[in-house]
Length: 241
Ligand SMILES: [Zn+2]
Ligand SMILES: [Zn+2]
Image 1 (cartoon, protein in one colour):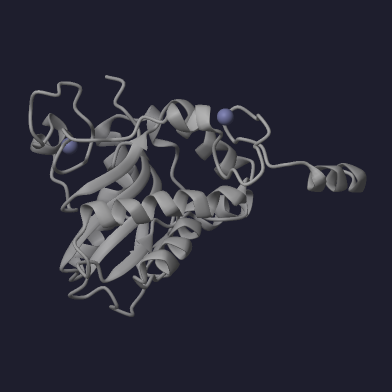
Image 2 (cartoon, rainbow, N blue to C red):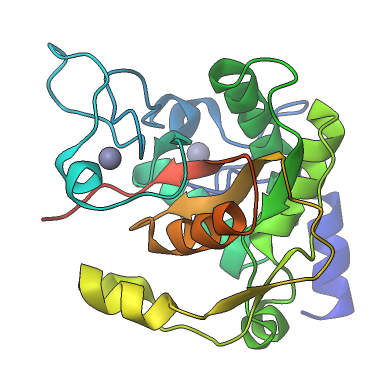
């Protein structure tokens, strides 16, 4: 982008990350229309992975996938489903560098922390790590951006370097459950600081897709001595099958 274009953009009001409409003065984040189209997750949902159930006649209970597959985290919660305006906004934020959305998203996540966890029950926030190669491509780790702002809002400390990604993994959407697990085995390692021992940890990421990544991270942390591991994401992808 040339200097003039940058300058021009500087004087333009911010745009909605979903529909590109210009926002009115003092509006932040989404325009009212796109905000009204976000599918917020309300009960009933899976008591373990947090996926919403379509039937409203049941209470929260474990879904089929969580009954048959061991989850190393106690509960995963998300704010909205990964579709429509929220999906678009996350995409702009992550791949087009709309970093102005970070405080907006972190505010939602702070609400999520308040809604799902009792005050004082979380000791440490940890971002799901990104492989250094991906980090170079993208320039930032979206989970770390969220964690930093969330930590400021909630007063819960964060550690960025406890988990590190050792090998780049292929996008999980194209893999079966068993393939995903195999792909992720040994993908992370932990630092020697042992700061997680005896702590209640909240793992933070932008999207819960299959849960394989957060499950692998949770496995390492709980086997390494964490008291409990929970997960919070902005969005939960709905299963297509
Ligand atoms: Zn909009
Ligand atoms: Zn579940």
